[in-house]
Amino acid sequence: MAVNITGRSLLTLLEYSPEEISFLLDLSAQVKRESRAKVIHRRFAGKTLAMIFEKRSTRTRLAFETAFAEEGGHPIFLSIQDIQLGAKESIEDTARVLGRMVDAIMFRGYKQETVEALAKYSGVPVYNGLTDVYHPTQVLADLMTVQETFGRLRGVKLVFMGDGRNNMANSLMIGCAKMGMHYVISSPKELKPEESLLRTCLEVASETQAKIEIIEDPQKAVEGADVIYTDVWASMGEESKQQERERLLRPYQVNDAIMKSTGKRETIFLHCLPAVKGQEVTFEVIEGKQSRVWDEAENRKHTIKALMIATLL
Ligand code: CP
Ligand code: NVA
Image (cartoon, rainbow, N blue to C red):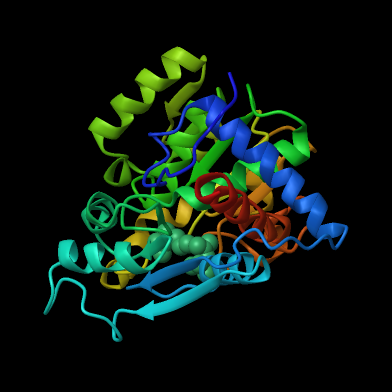
């Protein structure tokens, strides 16, 4: 059956089937080929996209804004300093007004409930551009990069090192479970993923033959890994935890020794970026031969454009 996701939001990625994710990844590859061939369409002509930012962004803003504008659409950047959102006006009311004026909404901020409320009350597709708990558009780019490298997702072993309860660890767990991958979180016991999300992902994994493991010992966790992934030790909004995280996560730094411990020369390194070199990853690894972080960053744009084409047209 043909996949049709017109009108859909992307809030967690749990709401998408493996077939729908594969469809988005195939479309992303097509969008990338068109971009390389300098084929310009006007697929978003006459459309508007509201982009609400409570937190800072380089890649996500650029990906949404350039992808939408180069297809003839009008992206509107709305920082939280510029609009009423939950302070003077309720999120529900703002959502209803946005829904009358724009074709889609991107939200980056703190609470997952905010992006869910925007979707519920606006009536237009809403894209989660990162919340405290999820970062689903990043995972589309990560899956695309893995697929480009290995030609497949099924059975690929991806190890996430570090803060095992942050938005990236959570969203990668969902993405890997959906696509039948082998996902390992390597983190100290203080930073394990939430039990309820782990249970949900294990249920998904039982349907897709994915494997999900939590392994505290970093050397053991990375054995046989195809992909080593890490992220900042203190996410946006958690700056006060920086010192404690440095203490807890130092053994989980991705360095040459960790890359060698996979026992595979083909292992690649991924990071959603921005990276704090010298903390979660060494300069040598992120700048080294196994690093694919710049392809991964570029793929943000292709996957986000594909997502908007699939949900808006
Ligand atoms: N990876 C990512 O979301 O980057 P930005 O914070 O720069 O958007
Ligand atoms: N975990 C990081 C991801 C940044 C893209 C953060 O939330 O700050």
